[in-house]
Length: 111
Image (cartoon, rainbow, N blue to C red; front, side, top):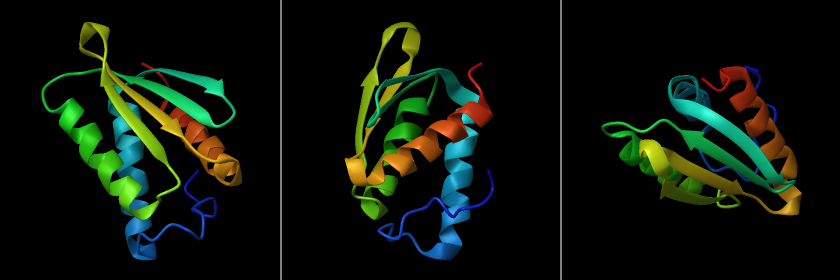
C-alpha cells in the first residue's frame, strides 16, 4: 500500500514528508507488532513488543502524528511482558483513515 491517497486533506504534514512518516509507522509495525484488535469501528488496538527505547519511540511518533492529524486520539500504555499498548481512535468522518492504518498493520503482520 504505497499509495498515499488515503491520507486525508486535513493532514497538515507537508506532502513531501508524508512518505517518511508512513515509513516510520511501517517500520514500527514490522519490528514490534505483536497483536492487533479492532474493539470498534472507530478504534484500533495495537500491542507492541517492548524493549529499550520502544515506549519513547511510540510516544514520540504519536505526538508528531497528533500534531499534523488532530483527528487521531492516541493512548499509550505499558502492559504485561514489557508490551506497549497503543490505542488509536478517530471520529466517524475519519473511519476510512483508521481502516487504512489497520490495513498497514496487516501488511506488517503480527510477529
